[in-house]
Image (tube, rainbow, N blue to C red; front, side, top):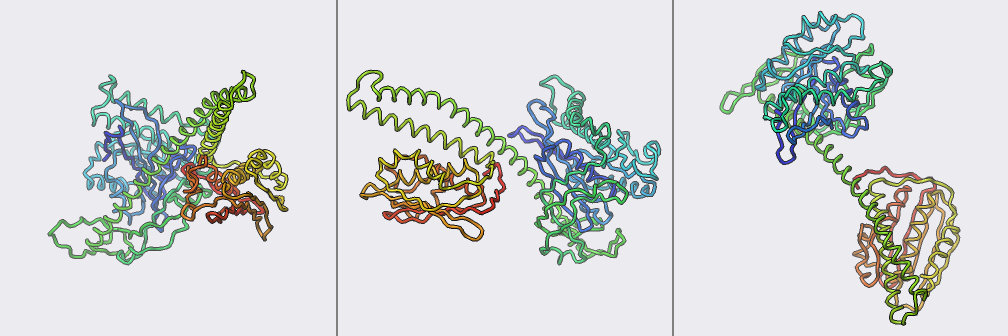
Length: 591
């Protein structure tokens, strides 16, 4: 049953799509997901049987408004419709707060539909739910096919309660969102009554439910209403694929098996019924194998006889006993709980991504505001040092030089923080072109000539190749590495030395930046690539601890690699490897 989370101010509710196999349940939930999650920000999760029976799970990010400060979250489910999966359907219905009964409108499915209705009533009863009161709507699907009953005939045959009915063509996204919206509205009204909400705001349950319904229907696109996208394929949106075995021995079936390559959908119609043949195939992730259960025996209570039974209601010659039935129930329940946890994880992931975006924006705003006073400080210090504001003593000049260095360090720190946060969230957007490393290195050495001359460093640049890369990224990479080599020279050595050279290999270019500086301790050679981390012997030298992190991210972004070879007191060599054809790596906003 749906539950209320006082800490997070949310009410979690469960809506189940129920009906015959191949009737349109999975397609209907996919339509709802596609319309309410157009960016696929929350993934669907599936449990597949070997005969394509599918369960889909999803906490849909629907803004139904708040009631007394509480947000209502709806989780959508479908059930496998084949007769042999009766136990699985029972477990999926456990705790249901609303049901969308999907009826196949074809004339040859009348008996199947009636059997599904009786099955729904029975499974609701077994879960302690009142089928006469639970929020329910009926969706008459596949009305686009020949040989279907009229809506009036179906109302007479299938409307076993005084509830709303909706004609639909799921593959054309017609009538599906309306049915979902009505079921969700009934669910919201039921929850508002159950928890006594709305009184503080002076609203009655019906008006709150109506607002929720209108919010959902606002996602119905005009193009769909006008039938302009009849042939559009439905996105599969599968995050997880749990396999259900059809082996005869349920205990042997409990072992691991290889991932399935079958579709995530159970709705396959040879006449354009309820699943597009162009749907995206899911990536199969094997977590647990579950044996099917065709029968519906009662699970024996503690102390009762557990003698095997010979029930075969599915008519497939498959017999299991009560012990196996109990084991099956536990396994199914375990996988359902696991799938719900994945849904929660998906929502929390979206929340973290949003918070990351906010942090990046805050960093950018702060850096922009900090740069204004820094520019003023830098200008005033420059005027003072130049004697434009009057003569200054040597002591004052030394103090101003220290202040100028501090301002420059602050500017570098701000730029590095903004750059690293941008890489973490936005990833790297490169424009690959032919870059002559000799020309690029010469440009950087000219920019750093005062630092290099001040440190008395002898620079040697050997033949460097022309590589395919992003010019701006390479400027940052070599600016950091050459700048570090100049900054971390060993003051005890009479002559600093910097050598930049490279070679061409079969499928990549290898570039080395070598110096005879203070070196990096062995225990720091892994951590220097992390944010705000530097060698343990650099306490006397200023630095942000972000430069090498940025270098590594930019090189990885080209599909390349970087590592360090160093010995304290002898020097450091950074080895950069760039593929001849850049292969940008996939980026996740959560680094």
